[in-house]
Image 1 (spheres, rainbow, N blue to C red):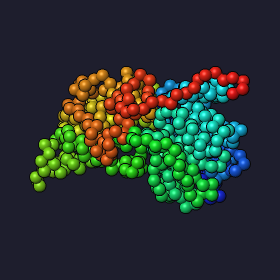
Image 2 (cartoon, protein in one colour; image 1 turned 135 degrees about the vertical axis):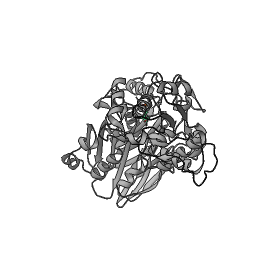
Image 3 (cartoon, rainbow, N blue to C red; image 1 turned 90 degrees about the vertical axis):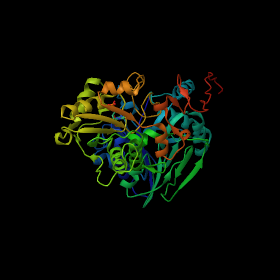
Image 4 (tube, protein in one colour; image 1 turned 180 degrees about the horizontal axis):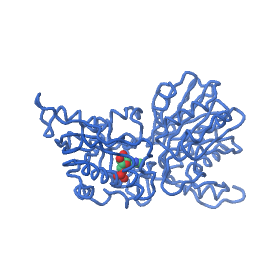
Length: 490
Ligand code: AMP
């Protein structure tokens, strides 16, 4: 199950955590629109409210008032095509002999089935097919035998895949990031407490201050009195596997992830796109909103040098930047539409050109990525119908050639336009006058990262985790899970 979500955890000095959690979920709404939930603990009892829908629809005032306690976690879940299932909505909450647990998970485990089979064989009853419940059961079992820190470590040694977790164990709030740091998670300081969140924009919303990212393989335990946190580096790895697509598409531009401001990275990617494949046209325009920061960086670089890399003459005005496509804000992301026909209609519902910016002009259209090719095909057609003489597509990421197993709901290999087509074949299919993507090296450069420290699975087809039927780009292996039957005296 691929889950691309937002998580948060808060521990305050006496003040109820429900409202700040609710505001933080609003700030993370772009990470998931299918369901929203909060679990709190008041020192005696766990409270939970999880519902389908957007944050604003899932909670009423009354709901927030029943969520007592100054410690809690929250979750927004992304709609995955097909199964829309309340049993997978989060946070997952459960009470065991070892206490109450609440769990919010962003990411995707590769070996959840193996662990589920093993735990089911030992008598654990599962209520969903999600991997979050597998983590909860594993942790609960370990907590029967060990203290909290050791129990988390043992679970981390058994699960393989991507995870950024916020957890409540009674009224203690924890944050965990997988040993390769695939999905983001950061720590923020509030006036009267601490917060853990997928993105720093959630910390800003609470008027807090970003302290730092949770390190890959680190467990952070917030103090119950909101006065600080403890850090435990439970697993060390030589290299990380940060998801580059967070910076390209998924995260908010105003978030700082793994040390870089997403907006600046996108602008830098845009600048590199001009340097690598700039084309002189009358106007440059972004696909709103995903291409906006890329197009601004691209146009800025285009104002400094020509497409051949020469400095521009003083009287050369360069390329005009125009917001030529207007977006209807009330239409959700096109991916929510399960059928191709609906997706095509959604693009038309969502975007409308401003004729005067395109009529009789040569246009460069900038977007962050091409997945199935639906958006680009429709937009090239739309701009030509509105009188554009030429439409050149420039894409701020490399071709997406393989699916994401690590938590971004992308598409299957069959659906990905670049899985089996060359750039020229794609150009032909989307009917653009020219098409160019950004190189993988430019992505690593813009992120100021070594290629080996990034997850580039969707653009290389080689993954940083051990996934059935796929190649890996490093030495990784799944932990052995003992499936031997249990005996009465076990
Ligand atoms: P497509 O129309 O299938 O080629 O999708 C490309 C468009 O979808 C671009 O405008 C992207 O900004 C956007 N996009 C890229 N990745 C995703 C994703 N995982 N979920 C939703 N939209 C996406």
